[in-house]
Image (cartoon, rainbow, N blue to C red; front, side, top):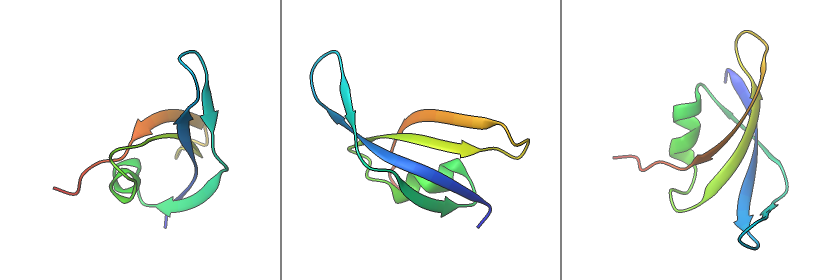
Length: 66
């Protein structure tokens, strides 16, 4: 696998704040392939380093395989 991602599930707490679950390390060749592994009904906070070694953090949702 090319990249190691720190994946945290976002859990809605109140209207203004969001709880973040424990970090889980997952590996994938790309961010799109990682999204296919995640539940499309949930939101996730992702952290990783790209090919230029820059630190990236994003909030994404899972994706359907179809």
